[in-house]
Amino acid sequence: MDERPLNATAASLLGFLHEGSKTGWDLVVTAQERIGKFWSITTSQVYRELAAMERAGLIEAGERGARERKPYTLTDEGRRAFAEWIEREPGQENIRYPLLLTVAFGAHLPPERLAAMLDSHRAAHESQLAEYERDAAVHGSNRFAMATLDFGIVYERAVLDWFDLVEDRLGQ
Image 1 (cartoon, rainbow, N blue to C red):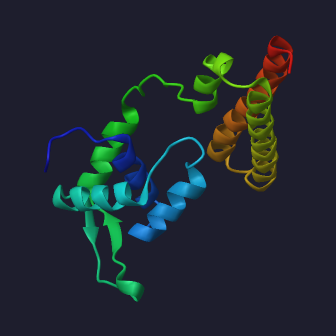
Image 2 (cartoon, rainbow, N blue to C red):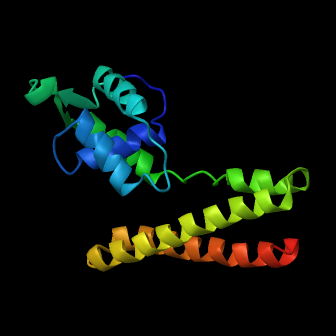
């Protein structure tokens, strides 16, 4: 097996494969639905990681099916690698919020343009909060899904509170 450490993208794919065999496309869709709001995984990353994990013996590809899609199955080595990854201490988060960068240089924008950007982003966060709250009603019995949704709900509420503060601070 390749001894490079398992990265978070590969590990998440192994985590999804614990639920059963999935094609690359199934994994793309699952990742977008389940972790896409807080962890970015592109289609090309999924297929690149699948190829690397297959070479490393962490997964096995099955026979091609409809639309030439191959189902992938977790191997014992893949289960072991995932178990090691999930036990490690996660790294620190890094806030990367493009709107904050724009606000940091907001003196270089006409006030009405910055206000329009803030309004647009506020609306997006209001919409996201509503979506998380709907998802919470559906996933109420899954404590792990709820723990993740709780973060999303609290985060969106905090960002909306920040919009109120920035509006007061900038006199918008």
